[in-house]
Length: 142
Length: 138
Image (cartoon, rainbow over all chains, first blue to last red; front, side, top):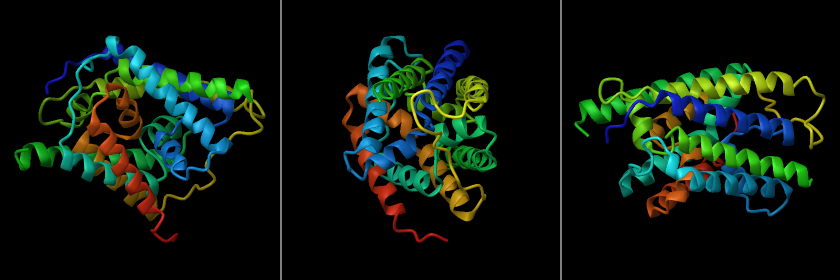
């Protein structure tokens, strides 16, 4: 699927994400790292630790549902095939757990705290992802 | 507690709105950013730059406080070493991200599109995350 370069809505969306991270930290003292938030919910202990994370997730889905009509190139989304979704999901779940974070946790929050760990992690997953796309799209003729 | 929970909910709403308005909730837009040699779409870079700029400034002022507005303390990472786990984990995540265009946030947010494949991805993500518990600490 070809997507249009949309810098203005990109900046706006990014600013909202940044603002979300600030509100979560200033309000509740937490890092807005989706991988960590998801992973800690897997314990299924319905305690305070679970509840705030569940609220965040509810907000995440609701925020998406409400703004779908205004989405940049995202009123219709490209979905992975079943096998790619399974393999990709396993790798994302395993990798973000081992690496303690993802694009929001390390990429946005970690870099904004000048965390060396996060800067290194972000560079690593970015480079690897770029190589992965190059191989699947241009070498393997995916 | 109520104010704390309200902040969390508002944060989630803004995060979801940000992902959607920017188009990051569409895996094609993410993959096209990573596809330098192909259908390159630089939007993700702008999303990232704005996100980091706002968060950096916001965090700067937030951390001048002794504690969050509605919580006892800031819950921040206590590990500082750049170790093998971090590097290997990030690399494995990078492969999964490159294959699908999904990272955890957009994957969860995509539930709003009511597509069964989102659920498949999330279940697989959960299995992968739990499997990581089996990897011994160094």
